[in-house]
Image (tube, rainbow, N blue to C red):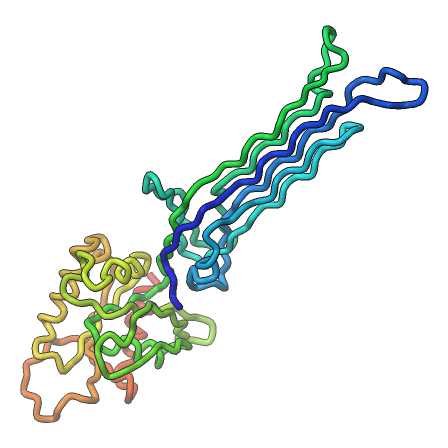
Length: 319
């Protein structure tokens, strides 16, 4: 299941208490204070794992708690630090505070980290409070509480190329033919209900990542039909491919619908390079007399035009 938005509660570990202790050695009946400091609490840390593609792994964990710091000991022994709680997320994860709704971190590369809730500092032992007026202090600090918070975790896919089209325009079929992806394919609208990623190899050592988002409908740009949830996944792409069924009554009108919905969602997306492609060219009737626009034509079934389209994409990606 593709999960791209969840809410979690995080608890940084509390710091351990400082110790009250005094030296007890033979021939030293009144030794000085030797209480050690408490250990620091563990922190809750988000870290990018490139092997993850969705937030499904943390869907069922609504609360994460880091370890508490251990108490200080005698002989100035420092308490054990609490264990950090690392939460693995896929590349492209955005961390937001729940209240107010503010972006705190954008994790895009392997190993990127964000400390969301820092653990509390361990309390000082009584050895810190010795003075000329008080040589036997009987006080120590308690550990500080760890930070706590509620966070919204959002995923925006990282891909080089984004496929955009109306329902049943051939996006999933194209992705399955060009890449190693295995999206659900059917000859009916809304077959794709989740975004899919595929790796397209165009030479022995070069490749790019292609994203297929569910088909857009009129009103998607203002949120209709989960439009916002889908459109956000093309915000990070470098090149857009507008796919239009060659059998649409008016391909230009289909293109206008797509452009309008993206414009309503985020005008900056339309600043990206784009190519426009007519799909399913193998299904076009021989006696079709329509004056079709001069867009690239492909057939994912016969393979016609696919290499030319990939070449166009690589030219943009190599710039």
